[in-house]
Length: 508
Image (cartoon, rainbow, N blue to C red; front, top):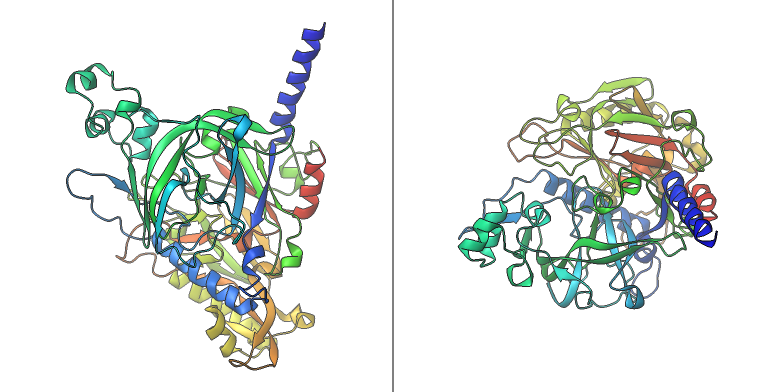
């Protein structure tokens, strides 16, 4: 009878995981960025400028032309990682044996499919001034977890990490004898997967694939994976912090979990408007989000609880991207047809809009962006708002206006229209944010201004490179539960009070 009770308890726990998923907290790096080196408040326009530059750089790396292969038969893979100067949201994992597990903080990135972190000895060149999850409190890199081991060169995961290179090539590079290559006997630490060289627009790293225990969550319902594959980086250029890749692929964090946790996950980003007092509670990340969990996990049907879904587009060159089709943008009563590239992905991997946790502001192709700005500016002028050119210079965003929160009735509504009749009407604070702007350098007077929080992503049809035509940034995703339903091949959006969702799920 005692054995039956234990089995019943385990079954209940498994069903709870399957129905409600595994809840993890996401921390916004804004909490550390809002305070300067002398514990003085960082001006909001400085944060906006930094975020706009980071968004433009990340989108540019998405669209960067792949560099030629390195000489002497070496291999590298250029991915769209938030590596310089970093993403906006972090999550904590534990690595190593349960008795001596060490915590690591990683940037959450839905635009890549690899989990990696620095391992001692670690050398990071040109990393001064790069943001870290908790400046002044972050742990120095630790040696590779003692229970971990190198991944064999013949492993399919080794091949996946090396851009699907044949295992025979990888084992030859690892020094495996020909007779062992022919018989498939290249195994063990002596014939480990060759080091990975990752090159990015403004940084790179060298890492080894390892396999060991990784823990998720700090509650009684936490999950540990004993044979999780990750990369230990020992040398990096401009890359001081690791990444938890959540993209589609066998090496991603969701891709290595049990089926009830891997096929569907969601997050709900707490709306902050660059104010630390709005980030007291974390943003919930839910692995294994049940399709009938509803807003509080109480069993309401997803569609009946506010979700709208748009299908995922297949990207043959960047399969880890969550690409969707943006068909139009509405500004007030004006519906603007999006560039055709935003609604399709061609054989070379060009086009579509990537739903991305690592880019702050949404990027639109030049023509679509210009038409949105034109319609927005026309409506703002009709409502009597005057341009604030100084704020545009300070933030890198445009257009900006002299604006007070009490006068927001004249700001036109804005909505995104995705394939599948999925309309996402953005709250005003998600696309037009008011803040205090210094009128001149050193001036004591600060003006009330507001800026359109969308950006020009450049020419989507030019010869500058390949990649997505647009990016849906995390600032526009605030206040929505965004569900990545990999099993059903779709992404869903539902308006939520993310702090309430965290409170509801964390009490379970």
